[in-house]
Length: 501
Image (tube, rainbow, N blue to C red; front, side, top):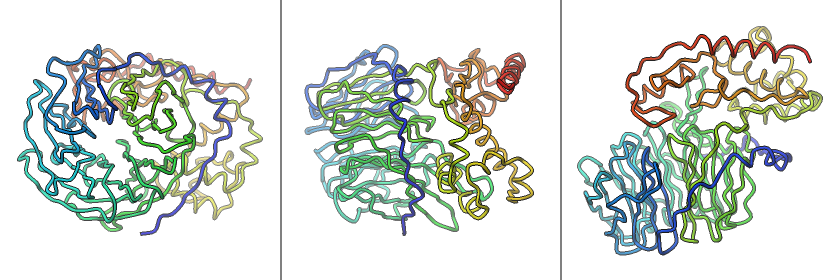
């Protein structure tokens, strides 16, 4: 299967942006309980787990970062390379150089099972499927095992083509997973352990990969793109799009390379909402990117040795980074600070009007509208034409029939028009949905007393989450009440922004 390069982005204004958002991330806690290098850290909705060369796994409460009474978990006879929670958070898996994957009860710390890799090779990575049906373990000899979590028996097994298996990530729907190897390959497998695709991604070896939990939907064709990140010994972080359909099979598209690290990148992870991507490197730095644009939001340089792992918490604004300096740093994002989605940067309308057709194509790809690239090229749409597009021209001239796609495209163009004004516009924080961090169109009040975008909180509740996105406490009721007062306030604010200066 052929990789198709969609575009490569460069970001000359990164330094200016950093000055505006650097205060968003605050170091709030440092864990220094391990006696050797930190290899991995993972969050559940209520806990943080860390593992180390010291053969132990430690578990902490997110409430106060106090170690739980049963921690540390001991049982592995050699270094623990990876740990992960099941989606419910009720069980924890860990894997080790000793060739085993252990399953632990997170309520009391009991070991529930010891799963031996058939080849007894050191196990480098483990991952639960989104529905907790399967657990994947990957080993240094390239073996991949799919375990049935309910029976704790081996379900399927396979091998990567070359090298050690060092990375793994499941798609949000659980229909497939991706593995990365030390020889640089990314391999896509289905849930029957059939190899669907194998591609060279990093010349000197893959070190980590992750798939965003938020798919990118193509409403016109019914396709779902999954966004994946990978990093490697080549100092690079790469973004990919995975298209998975019953009749087309799997297509892996290279999207762009995110620059910033000066040494091998050892870890990468998406935030739960897919809007941010974090990476950690041998250069001792942690970089947080805005996924949609590739802009650098933060560069964190508190670790004194290689950064080996990084992870976002699923339902709280926390980031954990671990290092060979034997520490885990906990960072908190201040959601009330302006972020990339809330500030319209100083930009000249002339600059957008001077965009070439290629510039417009790159912008479409950055907005997850890559399917329009061919259509826009065919119609010779440059920056000036882009700014002049209207609902009527999309229907009558470009023949875009899908209402959903027209709305999305018009919304992105309107956002671009706003960004071309000479005065920065800050959206009031109370007008932003706490889940999507976007301006609300149909705000509703949930049982926790907070207001959310209706579609976002409905999706949250329908995905069987029963806790508040803001407080992490149980929602007493799924009832949603329209917040008409807030909706009117947002409408009035929008009217003021449209008035000529």
